[in-house]
Amino acid sequence: MRIVIAKPGLDGHDRGAKVIARALRDDGHEVIYTGIRKRPEEIVRIVSDEDADALGLSTLSGAHDPLILTVCDGLRGAGLNSVIVFAGGIIPERDRASLFQSGVRAVFGPGTLSASIFDFLETAAKRRRVGEPVGVGEGTGWHWE
Image 1 (tube, rainbow, N blue to C red):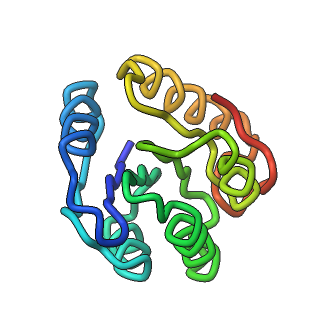
Image 2: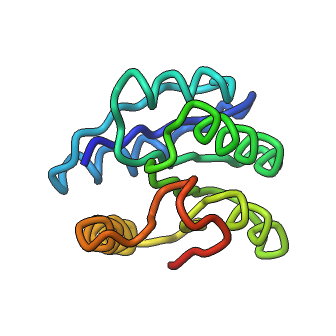
Image 3: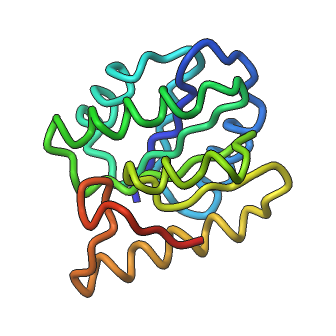
């Protein structure tokens, strides 16, 4: 898969995003890391320009709701409904429902094993092959982990 890993907002802590980007690359995926402090519209443009299958958003700043929701809205607005969106970082359980309703398919917190993310992406790929909705604009309101 072509996967964009992005750091939305002003959060400058990118160690986790870099670790995940490297792990995904080592697992055979083509990974594009955007670097830190990207605006939601920049992330949407990068996903479009790179023809990405998936987008991983990493956030530790506490601004996950407005940032991730804006990215998901931007993806749908750009017609990128099939992009699989997942998130990671410090995202409390109480805040996850709104992310899932916006089209995020999984949230991975601190300490998540890389294998869990690989399994998620493999499941997404299998679901896509059989025609099940997996993207941010497809069947919004459900998720799996």
